[in-house]
Length: 332
Ligand SMILES: [Zn+2]
Ligand SMILES: [Zn+2]
Image (cartoon, rainbow, N blue to C red):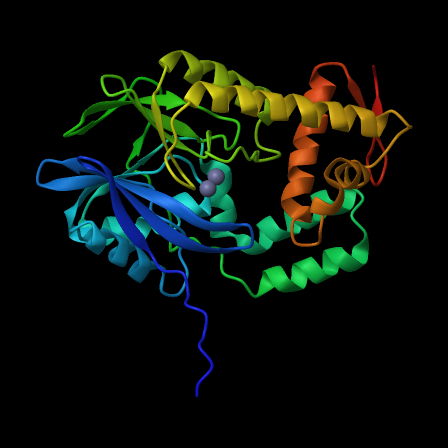
């Protein structure tokens, strides 16, 4: 008898509200098994919000999810991306080409586009940041080897037809969705708010399971920008979030509060890690994240730690002491 093989994750589509479908697409990342694209009824077609990452077979997952909703790629009249991360815009070029539709996104996607266009240079830059943060050579080299063989997740050149900024609108059968700029998680992050129905397409700004990430190195203070974005979204008083990962969720206010609390806790932990003397960002990350800090999670936890340190520095609570690798100290 043949041993049963574990069934691979596949794309799934489900209706969440009349005229709103969640398209759950598999991701190859440990700890982040899926992302969501959202289909919104619009006339004789749909507006697609986000589209998943590009990998072998990934277009079939999107097609399968659409099919379960009775839809096809050819129904897409417009593709809106909540932000320039590969799990949200990776398949934008083939979707746009097959559907003959435009791609709309916030204009601050230059750093993403540059690294997708030149992955070798982007990798070299990441390695330099890691070295300067105190990451030891051996694990860094292992990471580089693993990384080299992998694709970027971006299918072709990302061309954006319209830059979405505050107050612009996207028309659907559910009414108009207003663009709300919410940088922090990524410089290009936007949410789409439907005021009459009190819906928020929240991308990765708000997730059902509170989980933080910030792009490091492209804006002065991603953590501060994220906190400002929470302040912007709170008064919208949305009753349901349609998020970039996981199920849709209510109690939006409680999620905003939980995000602020997690930011405060992490900043406190970073402050505590600096209390004993000057440290590299790598040491701080290990102290703050403990057993969560593994070779697999190190790159993004290190990016976050650099963002925490930068935020404390701007608030006058941490000093960047320089050196190679760079050291940080408490200024409190
Ligand atoms: Zn993201
Ligand atoms: Zn995401």
